[in-house]
Image 1 (cartoon, one colour):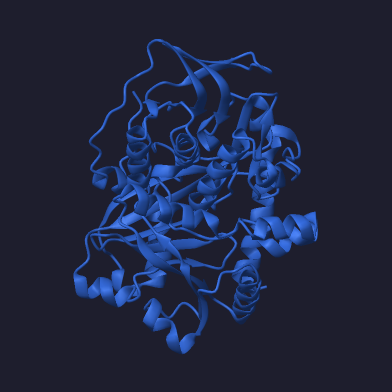
Image 2 (tube, helix red, strand yellow; image 1 turned 135 degrees about the vertical axis):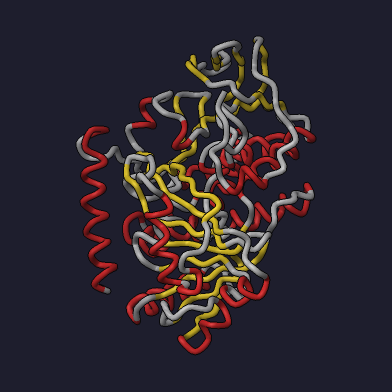
Length: 428
């Protein structure tokens, strides 16, 4: 049976509920495949609309990226609204801009409505190493304010120490619409809320085949020990769906990212490191991100391994990076180190769409998954309920396959990442 990785999140999640394995044939309105944020947000939104929903998870709730990520509620998309406007037109950019900050509000709405215990803290900070990056942040502030985010503030070098106590940055952008959470707790609490709404969850129930229905013919979702007949199917496995649906696998690529957490820090040291309590991410292409946990550990992540997987030693990979930001932590004990995969698309934009008449999918948030999964869940529920307008904004985006197919997508992407890594180092 699949178990959680040995992460800080798994050790501190206080998981109390195990869901059964599917061992029979059942029928439902909607079958959701995937027990991460995409599947859970879709399932909750559909239950709120009155649909009978059954959710299948191959391992445990939040086993994949939803239970392993940095926990930051980062706004917008991996490609920002100005890029969308240049490549896909003003109408698409306007429609997506109107949704760019909705994901965080959905999460906060779930927290309040369903009393989710997820260690939520508000506030985030984008940190700039160079004047060029500061100009990029000034442009981002102006862009986001056009679409309604009025909780932004630029800070210069003199104010940095009030946010994060390091000499690494020349300034940055505060986003009070941002925040951070314990990601595995969020997934587990959303599963609880979905169950309390009358939804049905099966864990350790990996889908091995889908027989797609059409029109009034039901689809059939088959696991090793059971099957689900459903009027609609939602595929929400993301980087952990494998080759279940080859059409989707060709248009995406798993990428690994890694995280460490230190030993518990004394209160005064934790307060000195990040006085604001905000989550932080820098402005490099291959960025680092970090924050304090609820029990005063520094949680620090970064880097990308294209094609998925982890370096030989996660600690050796990340230690020099966080010690450069915080020299006071040089030599500190690392209690947990783990990795996980997110799903990258060639356009860096999420892919939402349909396969045939009855199957919907969402995937490929390209590093912006915490917020965007929750937006996607709402849009899928709207579309299934007959309100397709906002869903269609995303389906209109081209879903490109990677050049050279599955064999060449890693080397081609590594080459591009190398180029941007050089730009980061040289400050271009």
